[in-house]
Length: 448
Image (tube, rainbow, N blue to C red; front, side):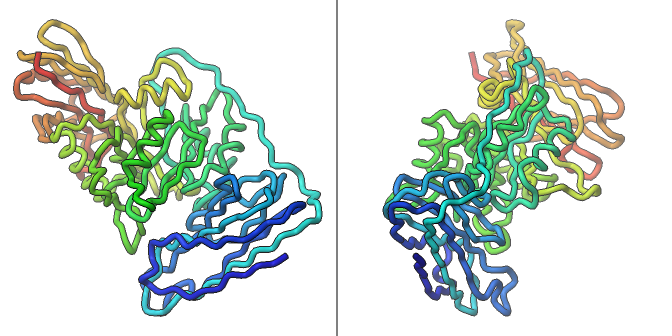
């Protein structure tokens, strides 16, 4: 059986979800769904059109492959195209949705979706993976990445290559966050061992901003429709135990990176507990995102700052400067690492080791992410290692530079702050050009 859907769209059809329903009879062994569209790029447009498919069976989500040149789906009980989930081909009404992330003028976009249903049994080997295990280590500082992609969405490498890179980089943990799908996580978790902890995730790649759902292996509905808001989406993730992180909030948006800039007015930051302030290498949009983060802290939001390489493939040798999350966790396990991140017990680093503690007027010491209760002087102490010539250490208090010192002349610093006027503070390490090299999460101050 073959069914074909044909239509023509223009630029006013951008940011739509266009459903196409088809019936799958009993006894179906496999499906093939193919998308063709023209033009790939309008003649005078600066950027290509960007459309993707999301597939649902009668029971729910069966996959998506965001922003990938290959929009052909092969699906059976044993195997599936990257981005999609193998499993029983359930009889009933299926839906393939055309997600129109970007359609640019002046030419209309013509598309054809072809669905082919086959009853012949498949002979291909099964895509089944057994999860690996990571023996928990004791308390300590663990390095890892919270944002990365593979061929299951728009990455240039497959899951084993992504994991191999994390091992070569000597990470302790790594998270796979493909766009709008969790199809790569089974293979990803099968590669976990005592040297590398794998953490589940997904990047909600909406038309008006991106967010990471960390610690989840369940697909989350990312579309806003029928009155459903981003606050509702975030609430669902948080209620199910996931960590919701606003990703690269000041990334360039439309049309260069459609949907990449955070534009949800009710979530600025709303109920979000964390924001990715360091995305990839340090760029101007990260600096803008950092100042937004500082503004949110000054508004009274107790937000955790994270980093993510947002890696999509093997980087060229000359590309350096991405940050890892250096987390103080009670053990190397998914629950412990994400729990420590929720508490703000981490700093972000492109090289330097960085520590920050504070002692209140009663002698109680607090680490990164903690709270100091004081109405008198607060003693702040920071230490750093592996800095470069020209690096400078800044103590940031309430979003302003309190003091800046040359990191090459010393490896620690201490300051006294007034408890009554200080709301939060953290430490940055900047290079000679002002680029970020490392930054702690804040310590917060509450008057006693």
